[in-house]
Length: 206
Image 1 (cartoon, rainbow, N blue to C red):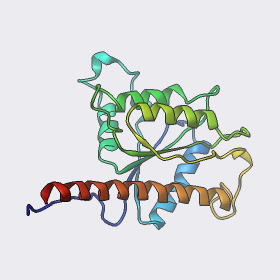
Image 2: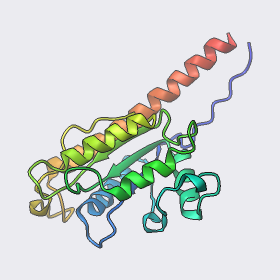
Image 3: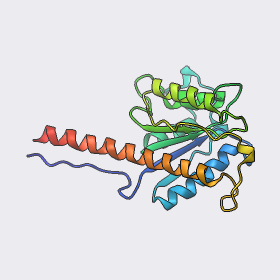
Image 4: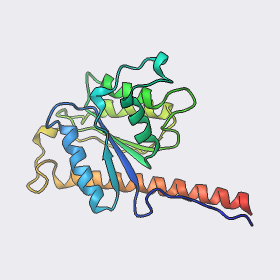
């Protein structure tokens, strides 16, 4: 029987890339990711927040093969992650154009999408009563078209401007529990994918 060598990036947890396009200080979704980072540490997961959003140029097919350093960094971070969590606001009933631009760069050239089979979840904190549902839905649809394994998060985080917690400073306990559940589901999705790969290689080596 042939030997099987499976390398797992982080045997004690997943490597999770965090994306948000909010550029203003103290934005709701940036604050949500700060809480996610703390929860992930407690769950022994590793996180990295992409911080070059404002350096990514508008998508240009002529530059696909010679992208800027910011685009190269984005593609590399997504490619080497085990899962991605996106926190997005809702702009005029849809995802922000800046986010769509990031997704396009990470999914190109054709056939080389960084999202193929990658577990991705989308959350949205919004002052509206719908919690950015339309932004989340449009983002999930775009991700599915780009080959991602979208992990549904259910509902968003509505009335974000009213959510306070004495411990976190933002978001009440039920919302924090929702974020914890999302992290756990992303981890479980990745582990399930690794197990499937091991089973497939075992069958091939038998």
